[in-house]
Length: 160
Image 1 (cartoon, rainbow, N blue to C red):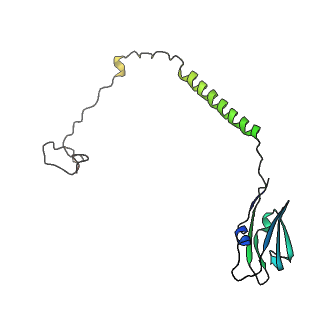
Image 2: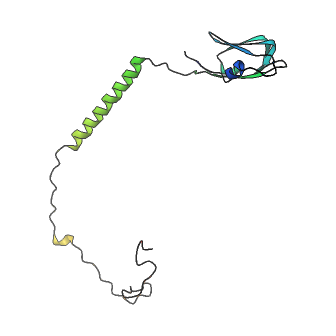
Image 3: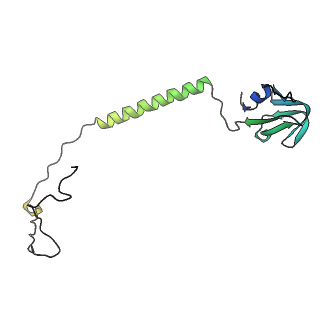
């Protein structure tokens, strides 16, 4: 069935009213539902003793019997749905497995290729640069480190 019908009101239609009021009868038809009541029914701009509602979202709403109970009808139609049969589902599953195997083999072949040995660079004496020593130890911008002092707030990590 292409259309899904959600009738929250079936429970209300089959339940017995204590006061013996009028009942709303719900009957399924080939292309929708039929609501009927002892008196006149109204809802969604429609009126009559029997209301024929087709499977359309614009018929969703509250319908009531005159001087009687109310019923809420909810239609959920699937306008852009694709119906899948068994062969389509099997085709999707097999295609997924084949694609996974192809990707796995490709990764294996690329990863297993022989790598050429590393080329050793010839080091020349001109490539090495000598570091310049800092000649200004009394620079006021820097404070010398004190190695022999008491425990400070940040000198030991993760100790509680």
